[in-house]
Amino acid sequence: MTGTYAHAPGFIVGDRPKIVTSRFEYEDSYTLTRYLATDGYQGLRAALSRPANEVHDEVRTATVLGRGGAGFPAGTKWGLTPQGVYPRYLVVNGDESEPGTYKDRLLMERDPHQLIEGCLIACYAAGLSQCFLYIRGEMALAQERVAVALNDAYAAGYIGKNILGTHFSVDIVLHWGAGAYVVGEETALIESLEGNRGMPRLKPPFFPAANGLYGQPTIVNNVETLANLPWLMCNGAEAYTAIGTKTSPGTRMVAVSGHVKRPGVYEIVNGVTTFRDLLYKEEFCGGIRNNNELKAFVPGGGSAPWFTPDQLDLPFEGSQVGAAGSMLGSGAIMVMDETTDIPAAALTLTRFYAH
Ligand SMILES: Cc1cc2nc3c(=O)[nH]c(=O)nc-3n(C[C@H](O)[C@H](O)[C@H](O)COP(=O)(O)O)c2cc1C
Image 1 (cartoon, helix red, strand yellow):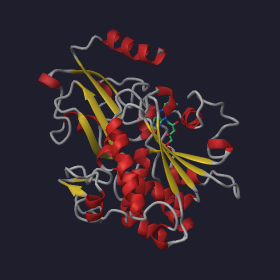
Image 2 (image 1 turned 135 degrees about the vertical axis):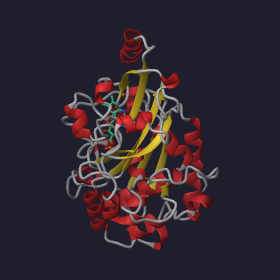
Image 3 (image 1 turned 120 degrees about the vertical axis):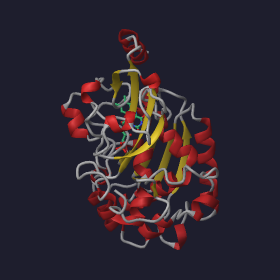
């Protein structure tokens, strides 16, 4: 596939494009120094040099699908806020609590400036005046790294008043959750941000884009969704949609756990990579442990209906996985080999949700 996507060196490792994990190989990937040495904040500069509505259009054209679970395109969501109602907010969903999911944590720990830059681009494009970054309570290292990155970015003039000498100003507030699965749901997260018990609100009337944080229009986006924006601004929608398929462009991060030889987080090409590729290919998980038979796998986080080996050839494409009876959800694959006691595994998950 090399050559089908035109972008800066360092974004392709082996034969696979890397949009959000390109800095993971550096030990100091989370520092401002490394970020600036690897094109950091260039996407923001590119965005600020254009009118906000053009930047919004670029994100719309690229069809950046939400990576938090529902797969709703970010550009379309930003367009749902009512005209002329201000202030409006960006809330970053870093709660990541769906069982099996641990991709946003890595993005925050290893490349916090990429997320911050994504937040700034979103605020500029969608006219959002303040950003609240909500990080799950248990993620101590992510909180620490994001806090340091925010301080460094403020000191360097990337956040705050008149960013990079322009008329664009925005503040980013870091909020630590206390650790609750349900707070990952966007309206519960907003309740928690407001200082209330984190329980979901009724939709309607509480659709965040119209009636969100403090009753104002609010865009809630997932960490990975926003982390895509710096690359998109540097390389353009055409390069972005040249990766993956029309309905699922770009890449996505998937967290694989359970009975594979090499569990971990992999950035895969959206729409074309299949579950079989991911579980068996050497560049990914390298097969089932002890060369056992695969019995079942969870394709999209703990709340997704399970698949069996019959579905291994499905690609990471929402409508096909949906038609087969499950969902891609939060990008968490849990693998169970022939030794798994299926009722016991199901009971474990059911107990979690009951709790
Ligand atoms: C029970 C439940 C838990 C959720 N947990 C998360 C989560 O941990 N992280 C997340 O980003 N989205 C989670 N979501 C989805 C959010 O409500 C919301 O759709 C998402 O943050 C929007 O961001 P996106 O459009 O960028 O994907 C959850 C949804 C539900 C119903």
